[in-house]
Image (cartoon, rainbow, N blue to C red):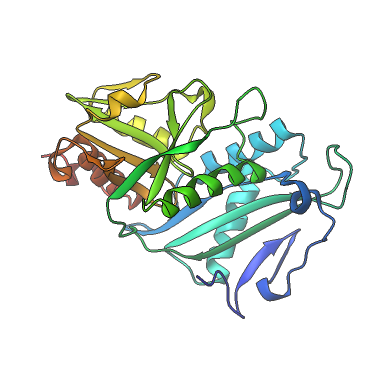
Length: 296
């Protein structure tokens, strides 16, 4: 996929510049050590015009990630939101994926940075990704120990773990992987949170060893609004093989149905599941449509 072309404009350190002309220092800490933070945000062509979905929540998390990692970030949430709308406007984008990145300046020492850069870029993204139901395997890679790294922060270097897990899954003939935590409990996918349905209740892992996703929070809010029973709890793999349905959720891919786990199919047709109701509700919310579109 081409993420930019000769006319693409991005925001970098206070200026709007052509993506093809943007430069970075080859001795930056983010390049060498993965010491940087980022976000992924979606914009949609809604019934009320182009809107960023949960922009303030994403930028609040970006600032929180910087704070947790000791990375200075001087921009306010409001400034970052408005800059993002300008990036969309300058590139004539409506349905798009936005990548804000805070990356560190040149420093080969293992110390907090004094110089940081802020980039905001975007590229076209299908309004609702047409992804087939995922065939999922259990990854041999664990999620990082929360006492070794700050899993609450969306840190660049932590995604090496995600790349390894995804690569392994595809090498084994699956679409995606499901990772456990250091205690053997189900955690999340390489780049998505995980939910499953059993006997009329939705379950999802608590946030101790996972990234507390913004799409995850939206799903929880949907369950509460629709009065769908939901529990956050630790659970083992054995419980998943009795699930009625399951899905991954993330900003980029929204809600992705899971067809099977280690080639064992789940118990309920997707169209009849609570998971499907949640997905349809989510898709209406991001387009500023009413819940009444899915509630009969």
